[in-house]
Image 1 (spheres, rainbow, N blue to C red):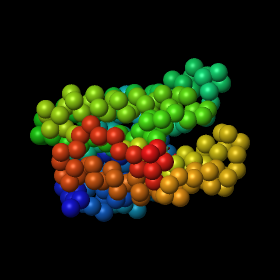
Image 2 (spheres, rainbow, N blue to C red):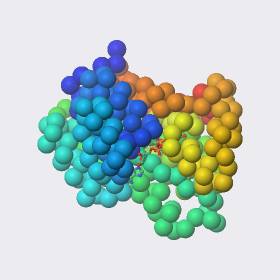
Image 3 (tube, rainbow, N blue to C red):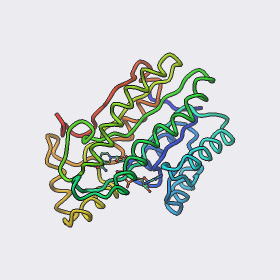
Image 4 (cartoon, helix red, strand yellow):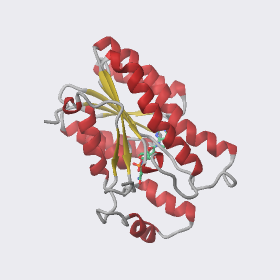
Length: 248
Ligand code: NAI
């Protein structure tokens, strides 16, 4: 049912974790994928393994985003699927965080979605439609400790998704948000580091949810592939938690 053959996709944050797993699944399902990331080594390696293309892109920089979209159009002739997934976290309260870190989290996690989608939507509209998936978080649905900028950014991603779905539905562009729970990626280890906790203890805590385990990148990728595909033809403006009932 989930078939992406002939679809041309851009995945951001594709060098590792959820983005990497999704790029791989997209390729397996037949899509032509452009991987974008700031990590050239891992991005190039992933693209090589998938038979895809890597473009160095800092999603917080408009000129990089424009270069990414231009590269995708030059390579594949258009964009059918945009997965806005790149993200960063700063584990701090509003008393602890610097203005610079606040702005960086908002630029990478939220503004990038505005910039990239703003570049891609006119192309999708001209070709008759497309699918955009944004990565939110369980912390876009509820709050969390010492992650004020991240919670603010992911709450914004959730409602930005709804606003975009309303604005661009008439052009047959679907916009949805996937909200992962704790997932075994570099981000989780980075959070443990920022909080001064052991990664093992962090993982154990993260597994404390009704399904009794932490998420794997492929758990999230499967939902993204569904949302990207025609199997989700009438799904738009949806916010889907993939978190083992963690936010339930
Ligand atoms: P990850 O750290 O493995 O992957 C994030 C990727 O984004 C990295 O390859 C990194 O180089 C890239 N990146 C960072 N800043 C960038 C920038 N400015 N431009 C382009 N690429 C950039 O982490 P993960 O978990 O795969 O994160 C993917 C998304 O999932 C993020 O939006 C994150 O907030 C979200 N998420 C992750 C959860 C988790 O527990 N791992 C839970 C909920 C949401």
